[in-house]
Image (cartoon, rainbow, N blue to C red; front, side, top):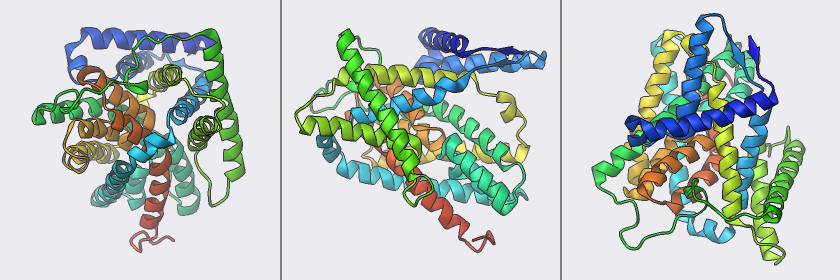
Length: 401
């Protein structure tokens, strides 16, 4: 076994990103279907590691940097959100929340229905529904432990991790093709028909920006304060009715910092720099997450569970095409939102952002998508998911309360 330390893992993640850039640049299929660079490079490395394991060679990474990078990304999302922009997206956010809620209900109904038909415990269907797909690894781990301890479901935590991993992979793979299909079908141009819009922030991950050492330190300080205060807030809310995931607390602090400093006239956030640091954090986070995937855990999934997860992937794609796209306006912004929905509907918000970046980099900017998806993916989906899961568990069908 080869164990890479912190520095070795950082080097490997950097090389994965370079590999992903090379693959997307040279492989027409990846470029045509808008596969994000971290997903392309990370999956290639994960496949190589799967082959090496067949020869009893295992490589392990130090993933201690993964969580700080994810939290830093959400801090930059918060620092990029000003209240004026949030007001603009009010109605669109409300409609998208309804679409997201609809998917959560459908995912759980699909999971429970297929599990029952295949002779499995209905709780397994719930675990392979919104618990792990929309919820991700964190929510899956929490509910997996609950299902094992309270409801006696064997191997619930292992199943949760494998299902969340499956979702993370597929969420990054189907978003681009779904958006491409919608854009080509509706013949929507890359920019607004009314007037061109200049891309900003996370919409242009590859744009060169002027950054000074001092401005870099200022922005880094804001991110650090968001991380510290967000973790303290998370600790204060733990085991209360208001408990939220750490990344939501960090994002919330970032929003308060951005708007509080601006309202007091003390400081204006340097948005271009925030987006640079956010994109770096996002890319490295996804690279580490995907290159360290244990694909053999997916291969070890029992066939019935694999059938459920494959069906969930198909449902996500169809829901994005026939529901999300249509209720969001059947236009270019709706196509980008559909790609983002695939990202966090199966995987996580960072995957959604990467999906949208891959689409907008090719077809043009969509400012409303980059406003709405981070808000819904960070603030609303986890809260709504908990409510939906508890409502399902309260059904007499389960025999649990």
